[in-house]
Image (cartoon, rainbow, N blue to C red):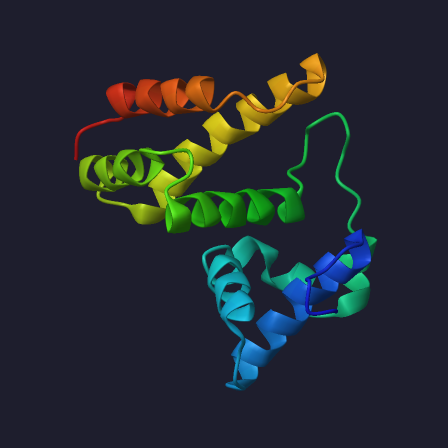
Length: 150
């Protein structure tokens, strides 16, 4: 993996495998590896996939949508955390904080935001335009309004 980060699907998957293996061995991690290992740690259902590089490289998500793509899922976690780190779009950090307070669950709050982000990215891909940040924040606010009180 270069300093600029993984570029191909196999390099990205290898980054997850390497970070998880280093984490499990107690080896030093880069900041990116810490983030990747944390995200993998939140998803025990993916651990068996990441135990060996070959299994991670062979994962082929069902295009019909009957099985989740673990790498897409973890990638959306990264995207949300990157947004929170720089508060872009502006206000996203506060919305996440409110979701965490309301739900009492940071991981669940991430998932609410990931759903809104995935919908926004899907719309952008279909329309051929850049993702609509205003619509994304509206979707997060809708989830905030609909979130169960703890």
